[in-house]
Image (cartoon, rainbow, N blue to C red):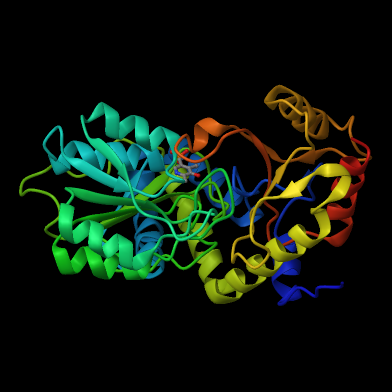
Length: 372
Ligand SMILES: *Cc1c(COP(=O)(O)O)cnc(C)c1O
């Protein structure tokens, strides 16, 4: 079966503004490759800091950073004044929980694929985690059962990972947002794997994300949108005064590049890339794809052949990255069960190509799988 990817010009544009990779990079869900424009804007800003001093340089970068805030606002469906820059997605959630003052012992409802470190934060804040009901084994939510649970239990908060870290599953957030709105329950969405990959515009009370994954911005920068009225009055801003301003400049450029590529087209091409990857890799030498073929995600996860331990898989991922398992070095992620402890039972190999992936890249990985 031949699948043709839509919008080849997006793949060309993505590749044209990047240094040629030294590896086959199938790891955008961990850290996308930054464009030359992002790198140039960041290094220009660092030069200005050295020539002008950090504060004048920051004042001169203010318009660019505010454009980034507006671009983020457009993607997340909030007014620009509700967007704040943070140091990471995890930092955004921690900052939000610090300000929400949810009483200890309150319940937060999450999907089974909830991100492990987020569960750690809920525990740290004394919150009790309960699971939302699902419609299938993949972990899609059962909307009417969710409505009943929220209506009868009135949790303090619902927290959803739009797309988890350990498999390519996209949650349908919009109907859950309507239910939460109807019952006055705050909804917080982790869009770390969603921004610049999936639609991120829904009626949630807070949405947060990270710069370095599908957006291909720099590391060490995140963002959060917080709806007016979610936090008690008088809370200090989440956005830190002292920050890596060059990182915010890079994020602003990455956001504007994403908007110029066209978020709808990016989404469509990435969805098709996910489908192509699953077709290409499923069933090779006992490796099996976990996702449903048509899941609108660019992430594919592979369960290793029977008898492989997590440490065998870890070693295989290392040998792919080092170049000893294939003709070229191939970068993927070893995603251990700790990423989603409520759902995952063992580690998987996560493949997350970006817009520029070529059939020959997947062929090279397929060949490495065949030889296991
Ligand atoms: C990567 C990831 C995070 C954490 O993002 P950081 O910016 O590293 O804090 C949170 N949630 C999910 C689902 C992720 O994949």
